[in-house]
Each structure stands twice: as C-alpha cells, then as structure tokens.
Image (cartoon, rainbow, N blue to C red; front, side, top):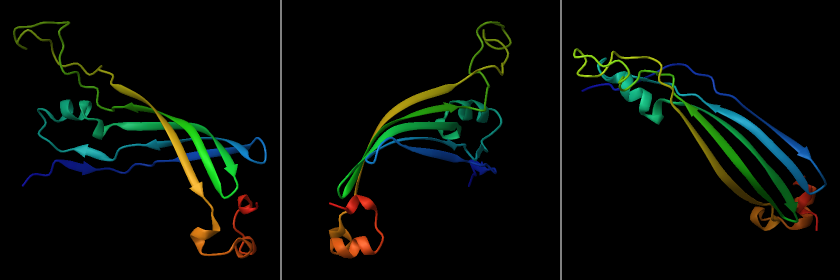
Length: 152
C-alpha cells in the first residue's frame, strides 16, 4: 500500500458585491480563491515533475461579474467568470539550453519553469420565488416575509 498524497493547511477566501442599478437590475461581482492543500508524496525522482504539470496540485483565483434581473416570482442572472491557475512547483521538465553528455544531451534541472492556465466561463442562473413551491398562497407568502419580488 502506498500513500500518494498528503495535506497541508490552506486558507481560502471570497468576497462579492451587489450594486443596485434600479429596482429590478443589479450589477454583481466578486472573487474567490481555490488554493490547493495537496502535497505529492510520490518518490523524489518524479514527484516534482508530476506536481508541476498536474492541475490537481495547482492554485486558482476566480473573478466573476454579472447582472441580476428581478422579475415577478423569479430572478435571472447572466454573467462571466474568469479563472487564473498557477503552480507552486517550478521544476522544468527538460533543459535543452545547456546540453551535456552527463544529462543525455539535456542540461541540468532548472527551477524556473512557469506554468499557468486561464479560463472564461459563461454563467446563466434562474431562481423561482413562486409561492406554489413553498405551498403558500401569495398573501400568506407576503406575510411570512418572503422577498418583494413576489408582489404582482
């Protein structure tokens, strides 16, 4: 039996904002971190190579923005999320800048490789505040303090 991954302490955080442009439209935005807690426990010979290339060991930062549109009994969200990922492991896979017979025409291992990833995603959301979902008539839902978007 082999243990291939360990864990370390990380702190992830996130924050968001909501700017009301009108009674029905809001501008939303935020960010969050997704730092990785995994530590590769593979043999020393190839653990750094695998950890550098495997996105499972990377850290990510997400930025998002969008618009929320309130409608009677529902809310629609349209937005985008940008993701930036980076690796803390900088071991180069190969060094062809300094060829040597000792390293089979490759150079000595360098620790200056930079890996990153970028991603953009489209987000579409829909929330239904219909009183029928709660089993309450509309009048009872208003008295219970449900959101103002229930008003006809």
